[in-house]
Amino acid sequence: MGAYLSRIRWLALAGGAAIVLGIVFVVGPHLQRDDSIRSFNGHSDMVSSVAFSPDGKTILSGSHDNTARLWNVDSGQVIYIFSSHTAPVYSVSFSPDGQSLVTGSWDGSVRRWSAREGYEFQICCQSQGPIWGNLYLPDGKTMRTCCVPVYGVALSPDGKTFFVGTGDGWGTLWDVASGSRLRTVPVEETVFSVAFSPDGKTMLSGSANEKAKLWDVQTGQLLQTFAGHTAAIYSVAFSPDGKTVLTGSGDHTARMWNTQSGVLLKTFSGHTDRINSVAFSPDGKTVLTGSDDRTARLWDVQTGQPIQTFVGHRDGVSSVAFSPDGKTIVTGSVDNTAKLWLVRGA
Image (cartoon, rainbow, N blue to C red):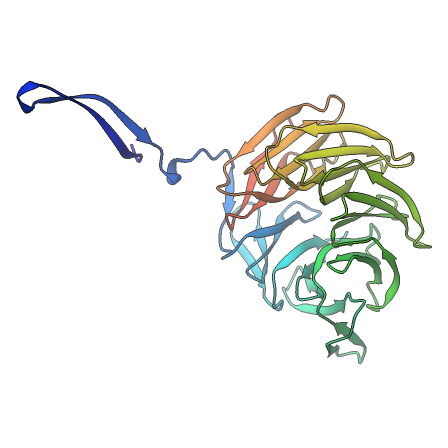
């Protein structure tokens, strides 16, 4: 059967004979339910971030083993291992054209890589403190490196800027081409997650102070504060039309808000542990959450009710993402794996 026998209950009879009353079987870890269609194995520590390429053919994962890995979706095989970081890789994303990818790490650096050939071609910095080192690129420009942990990195829709959230409570907008800092916003406390609106005009941040904040890209002005969670916000996302935002929190809930008014529209309740990651489906009709309760869940935006639960990870789900067509999702977990799943009815 593959299960291991944990206990046999006996009834003693006269004369030393005995009969078996019952046998209790405990299912071993290798027989644990797993609804996924593929597992991406190779990281030696938790997978903290996952992303689909724009064409849906590859998946990028970032891990606490200090590496990021590019995987073939169909085969499950690793294509490239990106190993320049010296601390956990906490955030990964693709450029809009899929030609490059970005990794953010607790070593304080944001690095850009070629998705086609796997080499690193740019390193940028995020810090409000001292600069601890320099890397000179072949063109003679200097990109700075530093020591402040990077938790969240988001590329703008046009691929020209990226927004970085760090452990020192600041959010900073950077120019991709030059690697120069454009503006900085005082988010307050550790910034765990950042996102760009679909039109690229606003930026969203989620932090340890239980609030999400909306910022104007051009001016850095605070436009809206989304308050109501009772624990840190670990993940934020915009709907495809930009009219709503989604937040995931340590209070075990995800919440959807009106972007313009800041009004709470829906609360998604059902997880039994903190929510680490949230995402909107490409059509905006469903949202996805990943939790430390070892599950990812799909929810109906209109009703706020769960539609599908993804079971198979052996530890917390740290990151979730939809494929471009919305038919599959990928999850990253503390169990050192990423997994691919089918979305029912998609």
